[in-house]
Length: 419
Image (cartoon, rainbow, N blue to C red; front, side, top):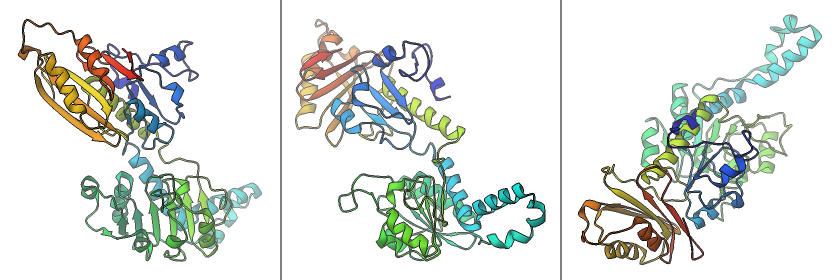
């Protein structure tokens, strides 16, 4: 359904090479102005010169060479929150799986069914699978983004006491939290008296000491958990130290996750599912639709939202006579003045402009009003102006947003001009 967001009169949508469709898939991919993908691991050599943008239908972008895209001046978008409800519902399911020995009960009844004893033993054997209720219990939510905040809200409706931790809590995320939540100052303090712990943080390569999140739920954190606590991990498997996890499972803790684990895969206190978090028709449709709208906003208006490597940038709607130019350049001093001087030499009036930067890249959106041209006797060819701007040292690419979306794109590749 997401692909339906692209109007057929303006866009041609085609599957990638080897992904079904006709034999022209590879050729069309080479000519693509934008790439949308889910789980395909994108290789740098698949990003051809015409590509303006890449969107991942999901939150993670580990299957996209983001650093290379930044170097090329290509924004990479994701769809945060599109699968939040689907993952949240699975986390709530995990609460019950970790509380009521449901999986053991299913396996037991299957075995009895094979023996023809299910009806005879259905009441007698229920005592083998006793559990506890979640009402009145304490849930620690580690990471309070879309999924974490949604989990916290619904947990309070189940009668749970919720405490959370998120060092990067944004104003938007804070507004989504239930009023009853208590915020902790560290992961260790958040899990100390919790009966359940839900991990909802992104995976970043590198140890905690290196600024990453690999193994962030290690011995020091697990040692603060209750002996019979249930750890819910529907974020990433690598966030948890498997050897340390096995030790606490041996002591009575439980682990529920939709990621594989080579150490505890057959532990009696572990319930490991396929990676089902976002595997609902609704979540896939929502992610595809969000990715499609993001790509359209960028191609048609130069708007950047939900990018993992470019700054958020949005200008108000422009009048139909306004010509919008976008410039992607290296984030180095003096670039903005070079760009505006180029426009000044052409005698063009800037109606509005916005300059934003993020890391090594800067993004400029400039609206030109041709009706306010300084010198009516001087005819300006936009193609010549674009080439001059594109070939400025430090500029990676430019676009002229006027008329059909996607046209008017040029790049500076090692000092050579491509349009």
